Length: 244
Image (cartoon, rainbow, N blue to C red; front, side):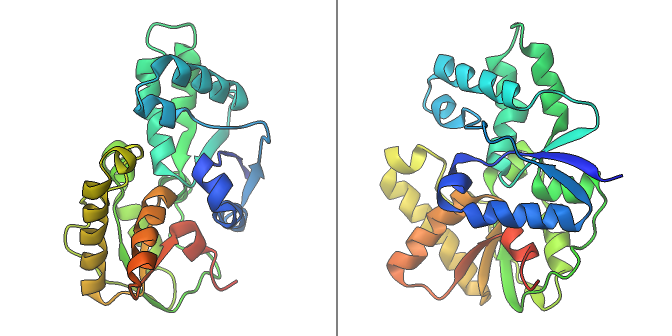
């Protein structure tokens, strides 16, 4: 029987990288999942929460719980560790002592970032037919690494892609400088951090910077394009959907 999956498509992906969302669906179906999409879904509330608007964020978070009601045997999967980290961790503060607390705990147990769902839940070692010729270096996003504990799973999936070789950069666990509103409030520091990350990636000679988060990749790609650097960014869903 196929594994039932409700997909959550974050704001960044929905508005700027819809193909990444489609590629996630492609990958999930390839490994035997039955994918469901609730078109009423909106945001997880992270932008408001990070900006300090806790009450407004709670309203959005309540809608998220309504959009993804707890049902036995169903998972929530997203192509963003940042949003997963928000639901899994920050909702604890938003719903502490509230009537929604029990609902939140159910959602917390069901939500996964794409690669951790593939590796840790389904036990997937490789995605059938995936192929990409070239070299990549991996960026550990802060949310994936620090909020969700994701590190080896993405590398394992990428290393199993025929034609693709990993070249680790130095300081791969260092922040890229995006940080949501941080990039707006502290622009100069944010750009300097992106420059450092891109230079570390370039030093490996890799063709691609790959990560779990489109927000990080968008930030790095903006610097790459502005400075005309010879490297590209790719979300891991796009890599796993390549070649077929």
